[in-house]
Image: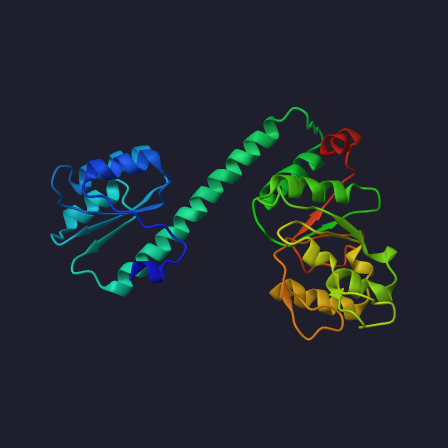
Length: 290
């Protein structure tokens, strides 16, 4: 059944082309399957009207009256794909799956474009240098993703400020965003600070403690001077980046933390993450962030 294949997707029905148009006006719909021959509005009549309401809509045309002309006309009018009947179940599911992915990409691009427009139109953030404008374009683009990010730059260049802008522009903006200065924590305690520990796992561990990553669940933890942590903890951190699983010190079980890591370093030799290199951030920009 479609519901088993496309979990998490709301599947709606319409008994006519007119009803389909009414639904499109009321709801955000990404993919539409339409027959070519229908009572009232035909599929070819429905297609341009539907795209007029929702330009990014992916329309898949179905017909048992397949001709080259029908296919060409449907594609010219903006159909995303054209399938003939009888339709093979797996072929249909594969086409719908691709169209869902295409719609998601198109809407994400639209969101990013709108974000860039709003960001550049915000006169409270005023940058003049070419370098800063390039930085802000990168910040805006990266904010629209959920990638792990490494920000490099000399001490005092404003890396944390840039990290907080990324958080503010991201989908996680309503959740927590806290920074941890890794070198400020003794090496023997840093693992516990990041991943937590269970009671009795070491001297002084008198109770279970939730680590930095779990406490930042759904948010954006910022790790300052990530290049200065020891190699064993870097190895455990790398594993966490791969599977997002947190295993507290002394525990035999793991938990999953949904976080978007932003790491900061002055060490430009660290090149295993998407990188933003920050020029000196103006004081005016710093004031806007807080």
